[in-house]
Image: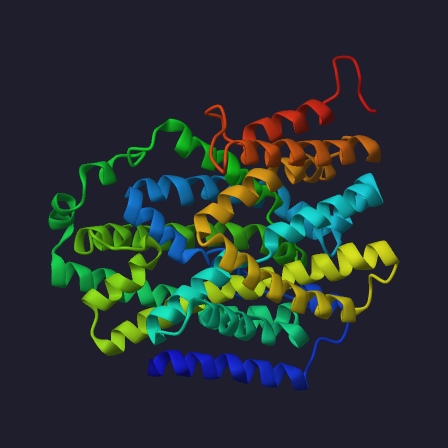
Length: 446
């Protein structure tokens, strides 16, 4: 616990320091003055996009190596596409947020609709839930207490410092996330057995590519992962980069770091299943494995690494949600979009909403699946078109966003959160979006 307390003290110091030196204007607050260097870009991108660490442990414990095919490969693919095609365009656009881009291309209505969907997708409820689980395991406190404490610590320094504060803490959190698993995996090999022992100790299905779930259960994540192309944290980092080359290179380097980290987490998930086959709550797979494997000091280091991994995402998404709610929704609606005040109010609202959603959902993977199934059809087509010369009327774009989101949401409800008629909800939503955005033969614009 001593290392966790040191890490908590570091976050408290960040809060106090930034209250003395707050961001001075909108550009400084939202994109750190567009001064991100390559190392800073990589550190903040890698750490902030991997906060679902307990969900990864849950999936790897339950389904084995398919974890890499679900939460690794499809996201590498789209991140590389983003880097090669979209990163430089995003940096050269000189906008501050995705709704700014939508308004520039399609008008105020699609910008407001996009902001509303982005706000729901970036409220970090899944990650707040994971913090609560970790704090509960470490202290025995009720889940709600851990959720509230973790949320407060994660957003406190963002309130005044904006993206500068996020990047500053992400540099430390980037190191901690790798150190934690770099300690755990070798310790598992020495204490429990090597990879040969592991192969024999896990269920046979855990070494199959689909984990025994079937093709569609894996394939749907390759469609959900297309949300990477509308990932607001990617756009924000690209907008904040020193130049277009930094944005492109930063994402490609980040993919290499994610590949290494995914190898560590997948192996750790398999060890968790082999060592703890009767684990009651798979979301606790990684901390429970650390408890069964590491001595107290290294266990504290690993738990600190888990906390850092999660909190780097909570602060990033809370911040993006605050910008989206305070500036892109409220500010755009009222015409007061350049004040920092509404963004800071929205940050407080986001924190409260995150706690409420975390306590309601109970599963990180469920939140990712449902929000990705609705949000991707709403945003993917309009955002990609905004980067091209293709023209569509504001009415058509707005209609496609509303219709695709409604169809996917209704599909989820009809299926009770599962695949209704054996079809995942994201597919009819994308179909509707495509039919409405792609012109009929012979038509070029609407």
